[in-house]
Amino acid sequence: MAQAAALFMPDAPLRLMAGRARAERPDAGRIVFPHPGTSDFDTVALGTQGTLWSYTIQRFPPKAPPYAGPAAFKPWALGYVDLPGEVIVQARLVGMAFDAIRIGMPLQLTRVALDDSADDPLWLPAFAPAEALVAERAA
Amino acid sequence: MSAGVHIVGIGIHPFGRTPGLSGLEQGVHAVRAALADAGVNWGDIQFAYGGSDAAGNPDSMVSHLGLTGVQFINVRNGCATGGSALFSAQMAIRSGEFELGLALGFDKHPRGAFDAKPAEYNLPEWYGAAGYMVTTQFFAAKIMRYMHLHGISRRTLGLVAQKAFANGVHAPHAWRREPVALDTILDAPMVSDPFTKFMFCSPGEGAVALVLASERMARRLGATPIRLAAATMRTRPPGSFEVFAPSIDSGGGTATATRLASAAAFEAAGIGPADIAVAQLQDTEAGAEIMHMAENGFCADGEQEAWLAQGRTQIGGALPVNTDGGCLACGEPIGASGLRQVYENVVQLRGAGGGRQVPGNPRTAYSHVYGAPGVSAVTILQK
Image: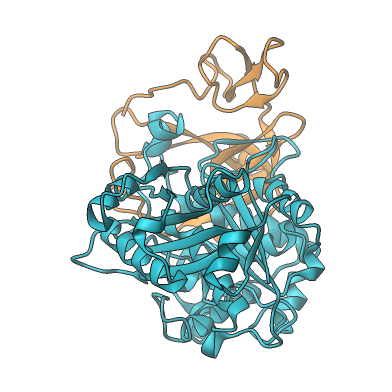
C-alpha cells in the first residue's frame, strides 16, 4: 500500500513529521502528530529519542478493512512514547519481547512495515530499545 | 438550583440481545413501563427528549405510543447521549416551561466491537490500515499508565469484574447474570494487555425511560420523592487522553471531562463525595471503574487497590459501586447506558433492589458516564 499522508520528514535521516500550532491559533505552540495537513500548523521534525509512556499488546486481528496488515496475524505491541518537551506519540514497539516492555524504558525511533511481504509497504512509526538500535548499527 | 425536578416513574427493557425487537420497540417498552410506574398516561406527557446512537430516530416512536402532537426532541451526543437527554429534560421543567415529561434512550448495536472509521474521527486512512481503530487499545494503554503511576495490580482489575458479575446475578435487567470466579477472569484469554475478555463490556441492546415531574406535579401524583439534585454534561479539557489518539499533549493524559462534570454536579447539589451512599460509575472495562473512582472524587489515586481488596465497593461496603453489574454485566447500548445508571439509582433509593439492595436506607445516589469523543455526564439523586 502506498503511503497516503506524510508521517516522516521527506529527507533522511528518519524523523517523524509533526505540526506546531501557529500563533493565530488559540493553542499556539501545541505540537500534534501527525501533521494535521492544514496551513495553521508549522512543520516540525520530532526528536528521535524518548521514553515509553504506556503500551498494550494487540492480541487479536483488528477488523479488516480498515486493517491492512498481513493475513497471518501475529500479535504486536503498541506504545505511547514521550518525546521530551514535544509530544507523546503512538507507535509500534519493536525489537523487544512483550514481557520485557517497561514503562519508562528509553526508546529510539525506527520504522516498521505494516506488511513486509508487500511490494510497496506502508511504513509505520516504531520505536525500539535505544541499546538495540545502537547494537544494530555497530554490527 | 431553583425549582425541584423529581423522577416519578422508571421503565427499562432488559439489556442484552433481543432478536426480533428493534431498538425503538425496546424504547417503547421502556416508556410504557415508566408511564405505568408513574401512574400517568402517554397523553399526559408534555415533552420528551429521546436518545439513540445507532438505532434510528427516537421521535418516530410516537407512531407506537399515539399521535398526541407532543414535543419530542432527538438527542445524539456520543456516549453522553442518555445523560444529555436527561439534562435537557430537567431543564425543560426547571425553566417552568413544562411540568411532566420523559427522558429516554435506547440502542441496538451489532455483535462485536464498535465499527469506527478513521474519517469519522478526522483521522487519516493509514491509521485504520495500521490497525489502530480499535477501542480496546485505548482503554488498555490508559489503565496500563494508571497502574504504573498508582500501584494498581491486575488482580484489582479482576476484582472489579468479579463484583460486576456477582451484582448482575441480582439485577433482572442485566445481560450477564452468572457469577464468574476471580481466577477464571484473570486466566482468560488476553484481549489487550492487561485486560482479559471478562474485563471488557460488549456493545449490546436495551432501553430506559424516566418520567420527570415538577415539584408540584410530583406531589399531585403522590410519588415517592426522588429529587434530581444535579445533572451535568461536559466535554474534554486540554491535555486529555481519548480514544483514537495518534498523539497526546506533552505532560497530558490525566485531564478529563469527568472531573469537570463531577465538580459541577457536586457544586449544583451542594454536597460532596463523602455524602454519596451508592454510585454507578462508567465501567466500559474494569480499569475505567478504577480510574473513575478517583476522577469523581471518591478516593485518591492509588487507594483503589485497598478499597477493592477490602470490598468497600461491594453491595455491603462503604460505597457500593455499580450495583446492577454496570456495563460489564449489562453491556453498553450507548443511548440507554447512562439512563440505566439513573434507573438503578432510583431502584436503590426506593429500597427496591432485592438481592442487590444497598443496606441502610441510602438517601443519595450518583451516576457517571464517560466515553467517546471525550464526554462525561453526571447525575446526583436525593430522597
